[in-house]
Structures are given as C-alpha cells and as structure tokens.
Amino acid sequence: MKTDSTPLKVEPDRKNNCIRIIHEKVINMIVESSGAFINKTETKAEIFPPIETLDIIDRIAVHAKTI
Image 1: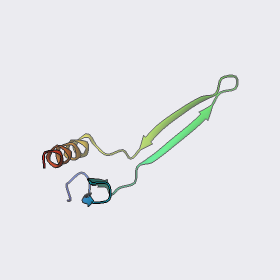
Image 2: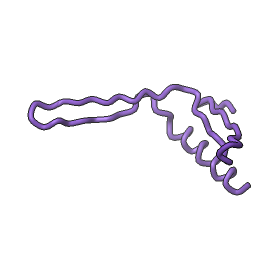
Image 3: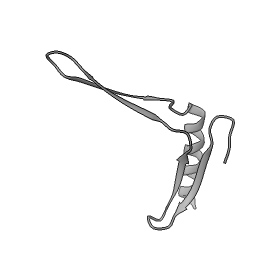
Image 4: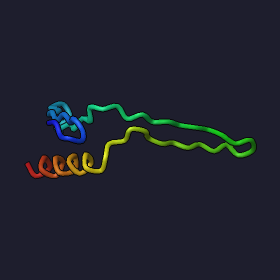
C-alpha cells in the first residue's frame, strides 16, 4: 500500500494469528542522558510518521479487527 505520506506493508502473521502493519520508513529513536547531580533521561523520535499515516494504520486495524 502506498500513500502520498508513507509506504505501508500489510501482511498476515499466521503464527500469531494477526496481521502486521509495517511502516517501511525508519523511525530513529534517540535516548539522551544528562545532568550533573540528577540523571535525567529523555527519549524522542525523529522522522516519526505524520498523523495522516497513523490514521491510515488505525483504519486498517479497525477493518482487520472486524474480519
């Protein structure tokens, strides 16, 4: 499935009796630790899919659930 926003792959997983919705672009997760006295850890995602892509994934999941 290709959209203007993101390529997605939908495939069955017979072993776990489900479908897999795979986002084909890489999402970079960055974990940063800092602080002299109190260790502060911050996690953020870069190149996260746009909200439109998440909406498409949600609609696919709803349709798959009803089958």
